[in-house]
Image 1 (spheres, rainbow, N blue to C red):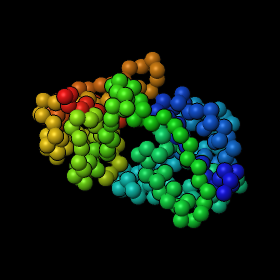
Image 2 (image 1 turned 135 degrees about the vertical axis):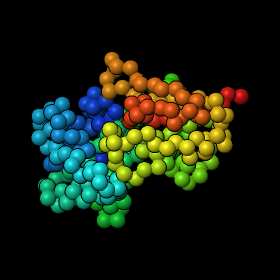
Image 3 (image 1 turned 30 degrees about the vertical axis):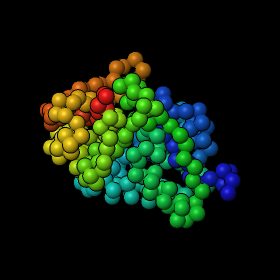
Length: 248
């Protein structure tokens, strides 16, 4: 099947919207009849009018009174319905790199495989990319990446001599899409217990929240593993937890 037959483009706006939107992404979105996006309506004004006028925010589907998976399925249903409603291709525009930690993308790809719908996923800058810049880590030295909850829940095996990057620590052990001010501090006890199987209690990790502009610093909050629960909500909001490997 030719790429000209694409019915759905899946794209990401990077970590610094709109600065991280690539020329390729803008070009492909401009070909779409409709662009469904997780971005709130207020942010769409940062796009060129020609592009923002094609966008439909599905932010209202991300309700806090039900599990996240139900929200994601609701968004997918809207996008699939749009395939039949709009002439020409439609798009899903999400944060970061669309293939990295995005359940809506995963569900859409499964839909395409099951129905024969031709889908293209467009590369973009992810939070992994920006965190690696913030901590100055070259992944050629090795890198282990997990969702924090999955790591502990599935009892994954890790290598303590290789850096570890844990995503979404703010939502550790939670299936609910809590608002930032409602989330509180997760109980990191099970995470600490898991990590201490591989690292010493004084080994230091870093909560990293990348900046939204080049002229703003990243927020970095170092913590010894035994003290992970002593972080503030501000320090873990929208952050990842980077744990360097043990030096030989």
